[in-house]
Length: 333
Image (cartoon, rainbow, N blue to C red; front, side, top):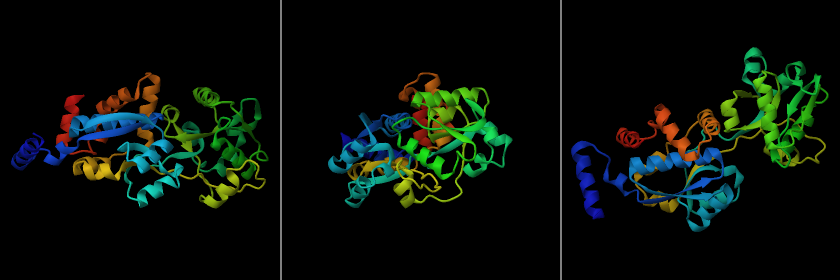
């Protein structure tokens, strides 16, 4: 029966230019859903497009970056991890690539995973000369501390975050205290989000640690401050990530590489059309940030967010697939 179906599809393709037989041979595919909002919604976008556009039989499984990628390398399962922060696995990923157990598809986030210090866009627009951290630290009056307006403020991350240590060390490296700034401890992730939201709604100036893509940056437009020096990985490891290090030097935040990762077995087994999709598909931090903000505001699930994206952002996702696949996906919405 399967051979007859493939033959029929091939004849149709030769006669009328429809999707080739290979597209009907996607077969079974397991896609991991990480416990991260951006990864979750991308997994459901992939599930919908692969199911409706390519005829795949998709199963979703829960997971997280480290255990899932390790399982893909050691056990060959699951088949696809749509959003993998590969820099978090400096030993597992290179070994998996070298041993031919996994392969990279497209960058899920071509911008990369971004962390750093940010200021509100309304401040950046009003003061276009402020491009870097050094520029901002010259103007504590533009970023008033809510507890002491004679000083500037920098919101730190939550206790226990690695980025909170980094911000504290960079605060020392930039001599921010000498320049009139206080490092504010928000107490928790909710406290940080609350401090940002409160200041933003009041159109107050502030500097804060944050990262992208996130729903908060999708809701509140922010501009990341640049660094005056390039990233120095050795110095970052020696001192910036070590709170006890007494002599931190100014450093740029690294940009994390975020890829779609698939098992080599699946890449060889599935149709070339499916791999062509996975090798092309990816979205910007701005796009997914706004989508996550919509999900948060509407208390929507990742599956609902995926459908919203497919309905409202056809100008983006239709570039990932052939026209005949796009027609099938649109018809299923």
